[in-house]
Image (cartoon, rainbow, N blue to C red):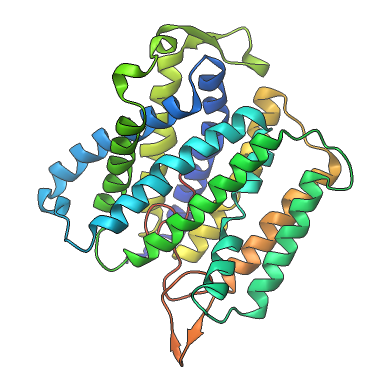
Length: 336
């Protein structure tokens, strides 16, 4: 992997985090415009799949071939990482402040570590457990468990469900790391997600009328209206294709771990955007908790290494050999 310009790599991943952060508030606009979370998830997956298909065909059509053993993993990746995680994420931000929804979803690394320890019987370094403990303490502050913080129960469950799907995505992505390139893997993820939604809610049964309506930009731009389809187009192009592409470009210049740690600024960035744009605010305890969550995850991520039978394992929850990210085993940004 070429790392000729670390500064350029950092710039790329920071810009990607900006697009992902803005995408959360833009998704809120689309949802307020009348789109159901499942419809928005289907539109995003289908639109991304169409664009990525064109990219793969232009680069190397042979990459689309699927081996017999790949089918179940690619289908699971599409359903968990491309369909359900998006839907649950949209449900969460529809019912919760954007920052809190993302912080809850970013507990996925802790879930991966627990799965690796309990199910895969892998040894987890103490530093990883320390990071998980700090992150869980931060979540307790965000949720203000000592009082009634007024958080929507369905929204909280949706965010935690999205975290579970994201953890599944990390694990499956790690399994696919040696078999498929980043571009085709991303295409098949969104491709199978699009097929999932086409079966779960056939297009002829979906109400697409909201796409033609005008919707307010909300908050600080409440007086500005745009067509709902324009917000969806932004989500597909800039919040998905461009953001993911920047992460892939960054990985030519910086390490996956560096990319991942910087990418963890997304919840903070999304919360700041939501504060400036939508007027959503967090209490002092919740802001401290948010920083604790990010700090804990950063400690866990940078200290990952699993040793099984004397061999460093390129599997999740502790591997320095193959840190896994949302797009591929190399790309470290949540699929938002």
